[in-house]
Image (cartoon, rainbow, N blue to C red; front, side, top):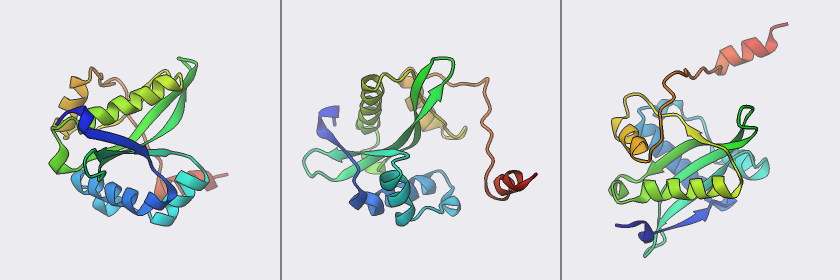
Length: 164
């Protein structure tokens, strides 16, 4: 299947159930299902009311069925001096992997970045996820091995916020 067999569309508020379904499938693939707290109502609020992130679906051309999705938001680089895009999630249904859908989604994302004059597109990948790492390397992406991602969440986040 070539890239021409996929079309793309921006998610709408009515798609929140579908978005959540993709998120849950991604979490299952990443062996993190127990970490999903997201609800349809949360997606409605953060994606469409607050407009904090965006979702693009890849659709199979003939049927129009959504077969992949990506969720992204803008960040800012002080070194580059302009905004960038952070790709939070990318997921393609298993039966559509290896058919160009992931690459087509990335092409859409990079077109968006270029149209918006962004300086970078960045994302994280689990170290054990060799198929995704090989895919990213095939796109000429380079790992940022000299950087370690840190996270404050849950009780640690609340404790630090409440410390005086």
